[in-house]
Image 1 (cartoon, one colour):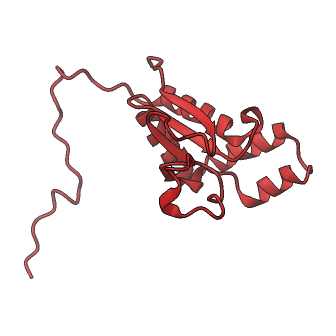
Image 2 (image 1 turned 90 degrees about the vertical axis):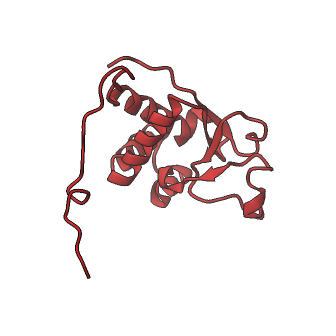
Length: 154
């Protein structure tokens, strides 16, 4: 695989106003007392994607001091191995190769926030994406079983 330079950044909620690219909120809950239509204008995010946030139980265990950050990050990475988060991570990896993606959360310290672990997962996923053929290569004819089924008359 050819390593690619991703356009991937992290930020704290409230700091996305004026950032180039797409700002994605990856916290479990949206900001309180903020109207949905004001999220982007107030620097929170353009799109909220809680699918990529840690579970409530994991956040609670970390906040209450029952686990340290290393354990939190390890468990978070394990949660992200489920099918839906993995698919979203692969999508963001492919997108970040083409345009700037900003990952945001409430946490002050990015070094102790899941958004940094998520950025690493996206970078790893990018390194595993297949290399696209050059435009000069001929396209193969592909079809799905549903596309090749005969027409059914009513």
